[in-house]
Amino acid sequence: MFNKALVPINASDLSERVINATCRCLNSGMVREAVLLSVWDAGKIDYTKLHAGDREMVLKANAQGVLDKYQQQIRQECGCEVSVLRAGGNPADIILDLTEKGGYDLIIMGSRRLNKVQELIYGSVSDRVTRISGVPVLIIK
Image 1 (cartoon, rainbow, N blue to C red):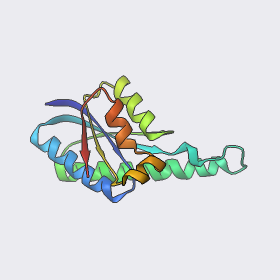
Image 2: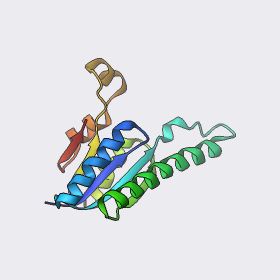
Image 3: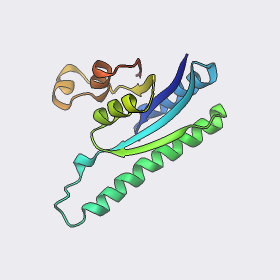
């Protein structure tokens, strides 16, 4: 049994499957508490531009919208309350840092189906988290 799971999500279709798996883990008693995390990519903002603050507000609002949607879904489907976190930066770094400092003993996350060339070029958040994390990672495909 796991006490506290970190569940990184975004606006992709894959996050729907991650949320469904998280509900199964909560309902079965495999996980006692889950915390949803949405990371907005601060690398997409050029802070030297005049409207950088507006762009940041849009990204933060989009991340919050994703959190609100899935928090409500878990509430309805599982009858559970989950906490939410929103952060800006590199997703893998934030997931690893939060896991270490937040007392999480499981990460439940999705993995985009990248081929080896795409993974080499774009990198994979789930691959990096899996390799570096000190806690188990449940990968949902």
